[in-house]
Image (cartoon, rainbow, N blue to C red; front, side, top):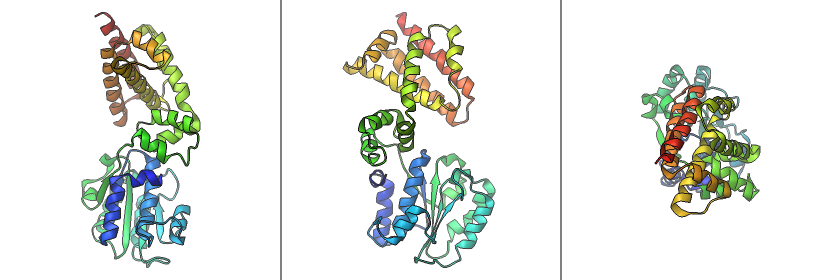
Length: 317
């Protein structure tokens, strides 16, 4: 993960601020992948407290931050996967006036900033605007829409975009040593490190891929939609859509450049190039609907019916 972070513009900006002695009192890392956010927030905390040019990962300060036990670095929420409560912000504000113990600085890391309600965010405004000396706040934001404009105006926002497959293969090698297995996981990840690690550890992609292939070959009429739709739910619909888009992209590449597996060759006889392109666009719309809390059953039925529609529309030409 260290090598991944060093490839980002966010890292270069913070490093430049540190080199010039112009660190911002509040940084916000914006990224849809919570796994990436959690790892990168720790790195930023190390950069803020370590005496090295960026950070060394060897000194007492870096080692304590890595363990989550540095007395001058506080992470919120206090429990993994929890929400940041108004009481947490009251505690944070009170702690900003207490002198650091081991360092000259204090760092407060809000790992899941989007979980804060409006009241908690409003309480934080004055501290964000006029923090005590040597107090730094690092915020991780998965959903920027959940953050008040007044909060955004008081922070230095740094966006973490999706990574290339090549970057993920290189950056995750230390935690995912099986190169072949990692390559397969990355192919489903859409540039998100956390998704790649999840696929690597659980091997979900293999089963989803088989399901998608069977669906594309066997689903021939609207009467069969329900038998496939019942196997898609809120826990697997995202990976289903990722795999569907990946499969359609492989069909597009087969038409454009040739090659591809025997399965892709077979599917390309069923789904013409315009069909594959149209289904990719339908998947993009479905993913957007889910992002804005669209009903899973409605999204599932819609994408399955659209597969049939696009499949037969272009076969008639």
